Length: 321
Image (cartoon, rainbow, N blue to C red; front, side, top):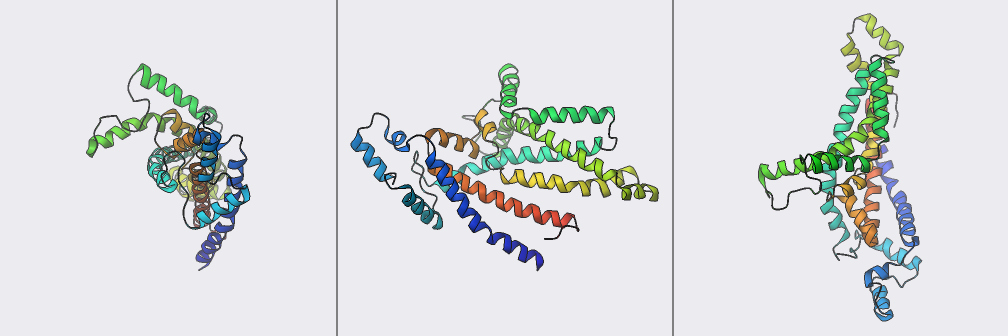
């Protein structure tokens, strides 16, 4: 019952938070320099056509009236129509979500699992040569700009060695179904996943190493050794379980921005996901797409935060909801 009340309480907070987010989102987009009507009508459009375009899209109304209309539209579950394609914004976004989840989700899972395992392994002997080397390498990986790493991977493995494709999600004219299409997608995923996972890997190595090293220095771990637990048992029973809390916190935050967290990677590799959609919408000043994507991202962050808090309490009995 306590868990249910807590979840209901957190869900009740979504509406006022979402209301504030929508207002801030609307204000930032509409206060940005430039006139959307010029992009829609063209720079050489005559004043009459420009006025007609502004009236058609409601751009001639005062900003408070535009905001009110937008809030009423959101309340009805309508995110509007894309300025470029005239398709419903929600349909356009949902069409791109699977590609982003496939790319960013795969990268995040690989980085979290490998980073936690490597960090826990080197934490067994703090200050050793291996620990120092891995820590230095993880800091370097975490500091690498993902777009630069992506370009270097394309230059080496796609341009020079020709092992992997440089852009896209599938081969033009390639298999459209079956195992052939699956392998084609995996082949295209290798470089972008490698770029994104490598940067995230350094963060999880550092976090797991610090967390496990702190736990292994506790007195109850010393007691466990005295009782007769082996080092692998101590690492699994005491070290990893108690060190997972900060890792879950970071993982929850990154899951929250998973839908749009791969903007640079998707742009570099021309991956047809939500991040590239936002990039294209910004260039075209397609404000309905931009605002719709930010709203969905905000809801994702709030839900991910709730799930993280619940997992935190499940792993650590000291945490009270």
